[in-house]
Length: 76
Image 1 (cartoon, rainbow, N blue to C red):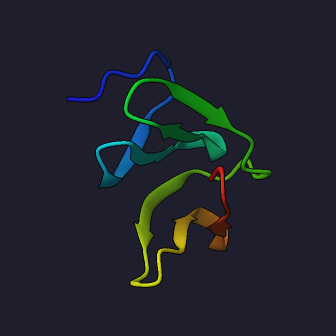
Image 2: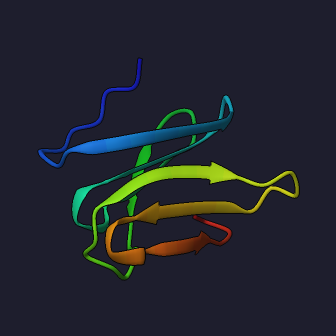
């Protein structure tokens, strides 16, 4: 179980490895977990983000309301 210290509603978790998880939620919330620590990342949007997934090539995508589609680069 992941426990994140936030009051924001979180909608989706993508765990790629034991030390690479990504979490998205309301108001553009994007969080990276490295297996030990959480880092809140700047998404650049205030849309609610409802899902996060990755392609076979390892590109991570987050999508949300009002057509929000984010390609997450290294670091996120």
